[in-house]
Structures are given as C-alpha cells and as structure tokens.
Amino acid sequence: MIKLGVLLSGSGSNLQAIIDAIVEGRLNASIELVVSSRPDAFGLERAQKAGIPTVALTRETYIDPLAADALICEELQKVNVDYLVMAGYMRMVRSPLLQAFPNRIINIHPALLPAFPGAHGIADAFAAGVKVTGVTVHFASEIYDTGPIIAQRAIEVREDDTLESLEQRIHSVEHQLYPEVLQLIAQGRVSIREDGVVRIEEEAT
Ligand code: GRF
Image 1 (tube, rainbow, N blue to C red):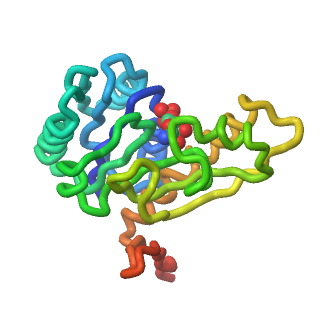
Image 2 (image 1 turned 90 degrees about the vertical axis):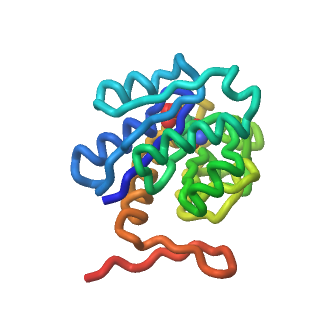
Image 3 (image 1 turned 120 degrees about the horizontal axis):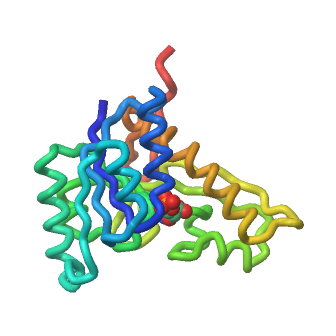
C-alpha cells in the first residue's frame, strides 16, 4: 500500500479515476492529501466528497514559488506521503519538492512526450495534423514535461476527429493508464536504470 499526495489545478478527472480505482480495489494505495494551486478547482470538491483532506493555495502563495513548494512539502510530510501525483497541476514543481521526493513525483501528459509538451498538448498535436498522439506518464524533473518516461499509450487521430472528440478519447485513456501505472509503482515493479530508462518488472507468477 502506497500513500499518495495529489497536486491539481482544475477539474480533477484524473484524481477521480485514481479515487475510483482505489475504491474498486484496482489500486493498492491511499490518498492522504490533495493540494490545489487554485481555491476554485473542481478537483477540491471531488476530494472532499471522497473524504480526502485538502489544501488550497492561491496565486499569492506562488509569488515566491520556492516558498510555495516548501509549504506544500511541509503539508505532505505531515501526512507521510510516499509519492506525489500531479494530476492537471499547472505549476512547476521545484527543488524543495523534487529533493524531498526524488523520483517519487509522477506526472501525466496528454501527448506522446517529448512531442507536444506544455499546457496545450492535445490541441498542439491536433493542429499539427499528426496521425498518432497519446498519453505519457513520467517522473517529473525540474524541466516541465520531461523526466524518465514510465508508460505511454498511443491513440490514433481519425480523419473525422474534432478537437473535442480527440480530447475525449485522450482523457478516457488517461483515466485508465494513470491508475494502472500507479498500481505498478505500488507493486514495486517500477525502477529507473542507470541510463535513465524506466524498467518495469514482469508480474510475479
Ligand atoms: C489532463 O489532460 C492531464 O494530462 C493534464 O491536465 C489534464 C488534467 O485534467 N496534465 P483533470 O484535471 O485531471 O481533469
């Protein structure tokens, strides 16, 4: 059983997918704390409904980004979190968090990194006319949307896709993949090799 902290800024549909996976017994974890970078994030309501403690930060907190991260760190350490899960967190994680949780901060991105990083991964891929895009789960590093890749899932872009229809398919893959990857981590099957490549151990039979 791993103890998770979740960082978010918005709707929290990935948080919901993780909560559901825990409730349904597909993910051997608990969520100890949800931290939002905004007080109006819908994800906070989802957390409260699931009985998870929350901390809501404001724009003012981030005027000093290092102090903001130090504060988040303090809150997470109070509840003994093992891993930090970024789920639509629109701020960078900086040294206080990266040092407190080395290779223990995980992010999801709605494109096949290193292609289409940034806040508009789905729209950028759609506008580029790619035939395949997807979802990436990776360990966070000090540069946004980089860090060792844990898992990726490809999604075909159809000729009749609109941005909305593509977004929908990407989000539903995210909601499957994120809990699956977290379960691999909970099972202790994810490690980073010396060359920086992530290795996933076969399931013990
Ligand atoms: C997801 O598409 C995720 O990949 C990206 O931000 C979005 C968050 O959505 N980093 P939600 O808040 O989990 O609904």
